[in-house]
Image (tube, rainbow, N blue to C red; front, side, top):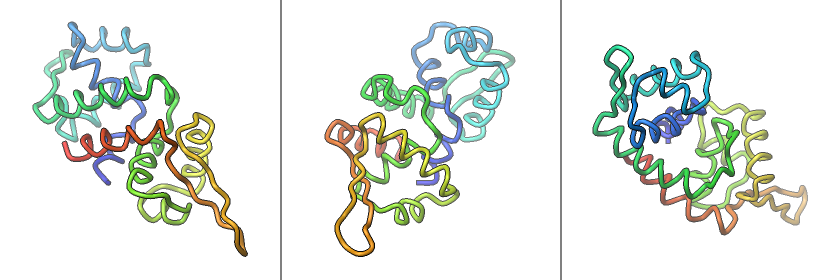
Length: 168
């Protein structure tokens, strides 16, 4: 799970990888222009991807490594399956979907499976996922009442894609 968390730590990681895969011009300025992202954000994202061994940079020209190509190909399928649902995703949204792909979980279980996530960050990401109709929040009967988070049907197809990205 930690590789997936590292990959999605920067919101623009997946779009940058996919753009490097399909974009004809891989120069820094062209990437910034096509993605409509600030130069500082792009610099930080490329540095993170480079440290993970996914991108190589020569001057202002960037290329995917073999590992980066695998992740980008799977990431392209994931982005098209999402269809813009997580355009303003929080960094924990996709790792949460990956964790819920295995089984429905309560908040504490999610927190334990995502080391480094603060309760506030998880709570905000879960609210976004519920609002985008990818996750269902269920309140279970009992005393005290318990809350469980479950992937909705349309999000279940994302779990295998996230597994493939995590393994790449």
